[in-house]
Amino acid sequence: GAVVSQHPSRVICKSGTSVKIECRSLDFQATTMFWYRQFPKKSLMLMATSNEGSKATYEQGVEKDKFLINHASLTLSTLTVTSAHPEDSSFYICSARTGYNEQYFGPGTRLTVT
Amino acid sequence: SQQGEEDPQALSIQEGENATMNCSYKTSINNLQWYRQNSGRGLVHLILIRSNEREKHSGRLRVTLDTSKKSSSLLITASRAADTASYFCATDPSSGSARQLTFGSGTQLTVLP
Image 1: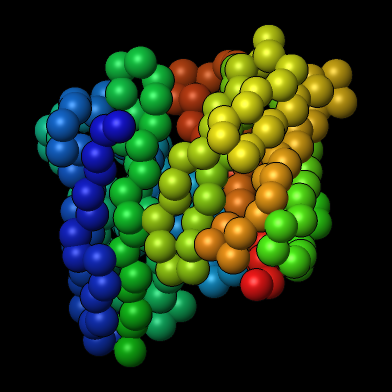
Image 2: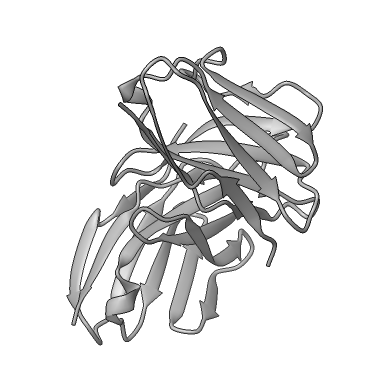
């Protein structure tokens, strides 16, 4: 099946700094990419939907100025957590949808803000 | 918004037994998918069942879908300790331009050796 990678897999940063997470579709072009957030022992919560070359669509309650999403190409989307705080610590998962409407998930990024 | 509800939230069984997890949803769907997630890891796609299908099998997995009741079940037969994980259902809506998946709350399955 198709492969989606995320980098880094784990990151620890200090409060107030910004962190960028990359999501890449390795062997296909993704028309749409999704970013999810998952708290421990909880389900995945959709944060935003991004299409290449256009602005991301954020879910209600997700601050667009805090979680910056850039979908610069058909194989790369980035999520930047700006001015991170401890409550932003979470597991962030991206997924990429192919032109056949199949969705593939990345392995996730564990963010810890100290 | 999250629309899927799964029950039970947690299930503990002995190796060799069958495990059944249920998922209910609220809106019309194009398909329903089941995923597995080991602790702290990414999602693994298990099986997809389309809205016009009632049952699907894949190895030791059996999925049913009842669109009239807006519910689905995942049955794992002859469970193994390695099946210990969280299991999520996800619905692909039949309308909307983005058609993003909506995940259920998940069932934590523990298979005791």
